[in-house]
Image (cartoon, rainbow, N blue to C red; front, side):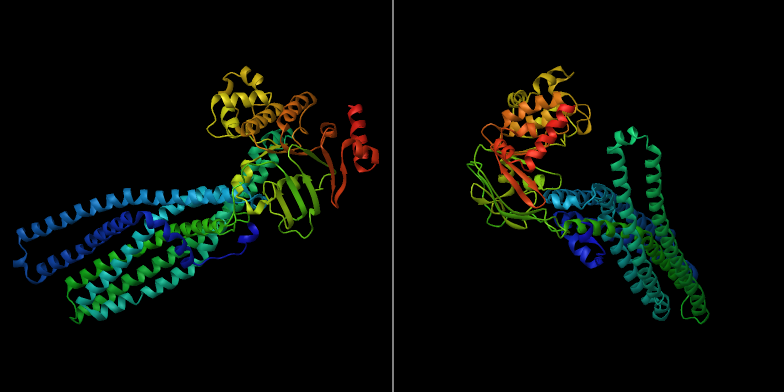
Length: 593
């Protein structure tokens, strides 16, 4: 993601085009919200008209200024204020809810997009950055979605309305006053570019800070085991200060923007007072008209001041949309082909046909020219030194990555011609690093088959050798296991992950060093579960402990140069090659233990 978004600056017009479709489900609400904004603006514009009329009568024809007339005028204006209050209530309640719903829709699309991305995307992306984008960035979009149309409509109507009404009084004075507006536009454009850039930097720093916090808290046991709390505090302090520097920079720019606009406001007031007074002296306008001008200029400047205050919110909203679009525009590199077919009646025959693979952003292949076949019910073991591509090879079967050369076939179908859902539904994966979700044991096992009955969950746990220890827990299958299963031992977590696959009951199985992190006792228990799990399934086993794969149908010795050796355990030992050396070394280590 970093590479794909680097130095990418999107125009406001493009961002707005991407954002506007989110208003579509709420067009009725938006129209009524803008109508209410129009009502509040009309109420505000009407006040100077009333004041001018009363002032004019008071100065030029006091007899025409009656109590009845004043009370009638007051009653009309009070009625307008009631309308204004009702309209304002709608804007601040229903209008805000509309913004929150748009934020919800965007977060839904954002999360859906993240779910559709491949492993390669997450290899390059920090989860903390994504968390920042899906939470705080979209919070700002809520205010933007609600206030942006309102504020610009109100400002536009006030400026246009004031200009028209003032032109009826005196065109030259009106033109002189409004001549100052382009200056405000230039000031706004000057500062907006800088605020946008700094706001984006601020969001990036927040994302980096979130990533640092996440890394530190998820690794809190490692931190404490090395007594490195002070180091983590220093790292956090550096990130926190970096964010403060960017935030301070933004506030300085915002302060300069506000100051320049206040100076411009003062200049406009001076224009009205000085030029207006000169016009009164020359009898081009009367005192009532001058008061009228002052009131409208105040209304005008109040509106401009609101726009200035909204500018910070506007920039935050646009930055949030930009960072949202930045993720949404990253192409999904693994998608179903338009004519993709469902994988059904799976036998489990797997073929690697001259397969090559390299990770994005690298020039060297991890796998080159791999040719391999596995038939239904066979157990293919992958061994060899680290970096040989064993896990990568297995990851190509469920299409977690796409090959860069050749093809991987399941039952004769190139996996790229199958729907990914049907392909992966027929493959079970048990990894070395077990991931359990925060929740109960039952929920974690049921993840293998959402909606499974209690009987099915218990049966899967029994087959995985997990039922006995689950029954001893305080709440049995409803026991809360903590974040990432921290309340369970390594062997217990692994057995739950195996139970999950038992429940899924896939015809193809991938065991990726599933016992390498366990102690001998746990390994023995888990290995029994794995042996039962593999019965009748096409199984690929990435093995660290070679004693666990001596009965494999075929053992593949994989190195950086490709397949170095292949055959049964007995065949490879008799060859006296790399496998024989690895097995002897492991056996010697086992005796030493």
